[in-house]
Image 1 (cartoon, rainbow, N blue to C red):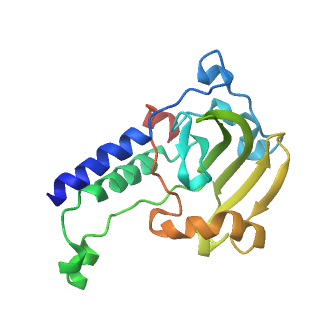
Image 2: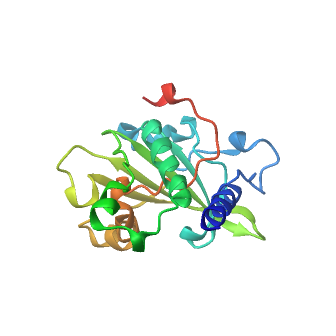
Length: 209
């Protein structure tokens, strides 16, 4: 019975993250995208719309019920691996209360870390009658060199307004980053601070190595 219930949750989670077409676009969603970041050519952010999508436009309770869209320049194998383990957690039929400490440790998922240079771009759209509306902001995670910020897996965070202007950037020790980004992502430190809970667009691993 417990296994059946968790399988139902898995099916529900997959159903919740199917691509949603952007309401304000008459053409195909990919053609509607406009690069919302100005500058930062050194990270390739000035052309992130050319990167493969991980998702379509997804409703997200984690983001104040906005719609989000994810793009990524590299590290797709690691993302797919961690996403699969996230889904597998719904099918884990062992009762944690019955596990001893050694068994619980052995059962922990083997999440992968992302390579240096991985950049994940998240576009955030306001909800308009249950559909994606106007772009509200763009947030970015960029994997820096080892030692940049060991407390956050060496990720640097950025946030841009809908007009492409930079609001802030920095590591987890910066107060605005801590409150706006890291305080949430620290809950998935075992996944290298990336939630990896959505994947609804076919991607080619070889394109992102």
